[in-house]
Image 1 (cartoon, helix red, strand yellow):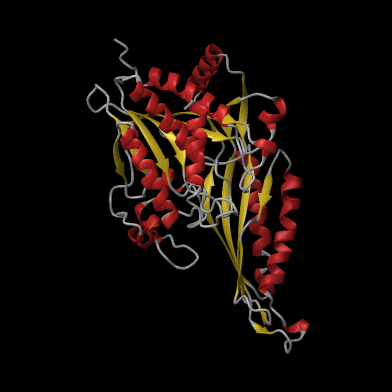
Image 2 (image 1 turned 90 degrees about the horizontal axis):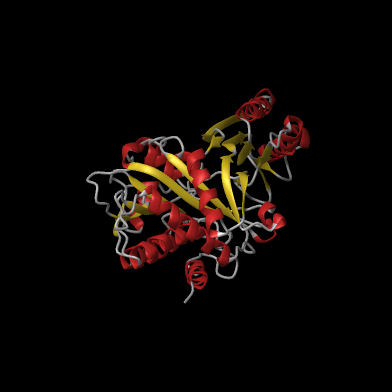
Amino acid sequence: MSLDERIEKQINELSKFTATPGKGTTRLTYSKEDLLTRNYMKDKMQEYGLTVREDGLGNIFGKLEGTVKDAPSVLIGSHFDSVPNGGAYDGPAGVIVALEVAALFAKNQLIPKYPLEIVALIEEEGSRFGGGLMGSRGMVGSLSEDDFKRLKDKDGITTVEAMAEIGLDGFLPKKREPMTIKSFLELHIEQGPILEEKDIPIGVVEAIVGLTQLEVTIEGKAGHAGTTPMDRRTDALVTAAQIISRLPGLAIEEGEGTVITTGRLHVFPNGANVIPDKVVFSVDIRSGKEENMNHVISKVRELIDSYQNQGFQTTAEQLLYMPPKILNEEISALMKEISADLGIPYCSINSGAGHDAMVFSDVTDVGMLFVPSKAGLSHCPEEWSDARHLANGVQIFYELAKRLTEVDMG
């Protein structure tokens, strides 16, 4: 079986672990689908001769030891959770590429000086516990132990309780010392149209957009839908709708590629004949420049606060803040050099999506590759990337990993 056929087979296998069969991939962190996926990946790691462990977040590591005692590891991987009704490639493609790099090390009996570690990260999307990038943020310490334990899903289940339900230990160590990480490499589908439109199979990511996520709560008063006059209402949903409708204009006014999205909204008590007394919704703000992002955050907060004087209680909690990141120039140059040597066309590209790579860039050298997404689609069942392009990523990362781990070819 060829490399691209093996990749496609594994993508298809992982796509079966979904809570919404026939309606895309829904794989929430610490769910039964999570457990099936992690068992599959742990088996693969062991098959390729890696030593497997999980940390107190549920991140999975498969390690090929190096000959240098206590040397830092070269990490390769991505996340394996999904958005609701998402695609099969966002995240898992990067984990599978990393596994295939390890398979090549095993096949060719390579002995590294620095350890090679394949990593499968949890809760990058934030679909269950909010915020996102939880696995990487917990590893580098930007998500504290106390904050992790306080996180709850929409049903009030804490992270530690959810971990226990699938047999994970939420009390194991979470933070990893930066001195144990030599570099981090991540391959991801582009989730946009640029590479496909240019007909270029590899994008070398130079920078990642900054992003923040707010959780906004609007509290009014409940009332009967038929007996409460229109001029006596304090309708939380109407107010939330007014705020949300003004958000796109703030991004357009700011310009510079700034974008705002509200993708999640919960209405309470959610009855057809009850005036809503509380609404909770998300606000996702992204920009390539930190000053633009902060300017829009201030405007959003001002807009939300302006309703305090109209009989409503409003709050805006910042769940995540990540400034724009420039990735390691030396690793980017190496990836371009290797691509050229392999005869694989490439171009430089920036990412408009957040990734675990941006978290690791605060503590180690980071490199990232994109492969084309069909029609630029992502976060939907139609998401698809060519396994041949993913195989290109394996070859590039394999050659790069040999250099970074200083493989003994003797």
